[in-house]
Every structure is written in structure tokens, then in C-alpha cells.
Image (cartoon, rainbow, N blue to C red; front, side, top):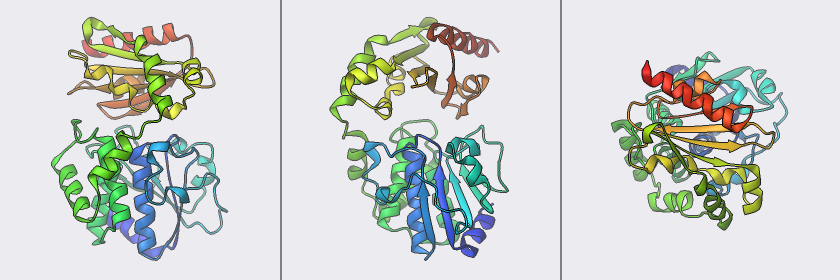
Length: 319
């Protein structure tokens, strides 16, 4: 598929780049890197996201160029959909994007069944950013500092700073190449991990008392309510990273963040260690993701949601 995508990039001139709603570091880093790469080739490119860029990613070069309203349909020849397992994940304008003549999808989610003809999908890749590094190498392109910083951000955020099991030899080689191209690991890491607003820390203080350990110490969870977010003066994006905290407890294999949404539903973010597969759990409730990182959304009373999730975890553990 690399030759096919390379051919489409070379043949066309006007591109729309997008990713999933509530974009994270991999989505934003990949989008903006693709933007810089296309611009270096003399192409026209627009990055569109339904949702605003989280504060800790606004340092990324080009983040101020992201638009939140789709440009007119006529000039766009190709839509590049990154870090999305299904087109609907881009948000409310998925239908308009589907009407763009040519769609390219680059993604590493195991739940991606392939929703367009030109699709580069590799569930074994650490990140979409790593896959873009492969495309760059295949095309024989030179990555500038701006794209290198963006791709390095994509790599470190989806690997937890190269701590997660999805960190492979290819990941580290790609990171080394990006540093050689001008990426600044300290500068990127400081902005991603060490620029928390006070509201996020206040919210964390309110959330930690909700810590629950279940299933003989194997499952740990935290809960974030809309009331807690409002009381802390925080934003939903400030929960980023909270799901990782229970996993740091000795014996915990599955970590869950139950985050209440404005419409009363709950978004469940799940993380796991080793070969424990949380993607199967998320898929049971209409979600998806990766073996060690997955998510879904559920309706209903929180106690009932927790009961259903724990029962599902228990059932998969027994199978």
C-alpha cells in the first residue's frame, strides 16, 4: 500500500488532513507532520479537527493553522484520515469527508476493518506517527525540524515515553532518525508532560479518592464526574493521563478511567499490562483500540456500568 499512497500524494495537489475527535498526541503530531511534509512538496494542505487542540499540544509547529470548520468541498481532491479506525470517528462531518473523491487512511488500531481503498493499517505499529515515518522513508523524503518534532511527539505519546509494550525496534530507530532530523526530545517532553495547568492538578486531587481496586487487585479504576471537572475549573482534556495512574500500582493489570460526558454517558478508557487484552473488553461495548489501550462509551448508571465491565473482564479472563 505504500506505493499506492505515494502515487496518490504525488499525483494530487489539494489535501484535507484530519483525525479522530478529541485528538491526542499521536493524532495531532501525525496530522501536523503530514501537513509540513505536503507543504514541502509544494502541495496545498488543510488540517481539520472537529475539536479544539488541547493546551499541552499547542506548542506543535503549525497547530495554529488547524481549522475547525470544513473548507469548501470543491477544491479538495484527497482526504488523509489519520489514527482513525472508522470514518465516523472524525466527528459530525464524517459524511462530508466521505464525499471527497479520494480517501487515504493511515492507522494502527486493531479494530480497523478498512473503510477506504487506499488504507495503510498495521496494528503492530506503535503509532500512526511511526507509520508516517515509514511512508517518508519509502518516498525518499527529507523531514524538516517542524515535521520531526511533530512525529517525535506522536511516537512518545502513544508509547508512554517508550515505556509501553508497543515500543519496538522500528519505533526506536524512527525516533533516532527524527532526532537526527532536528527533533528536540527535551523540548517536546517538557511541553507534553511538564506544562500542566493548575486546574488539572486540582482535578487530579479530586479524582484520586475515587480509586477502586477490584478482582483481587488486578483491576484498578478512577472516576471523573462533570461536577468534579467544574469544581476544579478544569476541561475534559485535563483528564489526559489519569487512566495510567492505577496501572502503576503493584499487581494491577487493568486500569480503567470512568469519565462522565456532558450528555450523561461515560467514556471508558482502559489500559493493561503485558498480554492482557482490553481491546476485547472495549469491543464488547461497541468500542475498540489496541491490545493494551482501548476505549468505549456506555450509557446508564455508573454502578451498573462498572458491574457489566467487571463481569466482561472476568468472562474473558476465564476464556
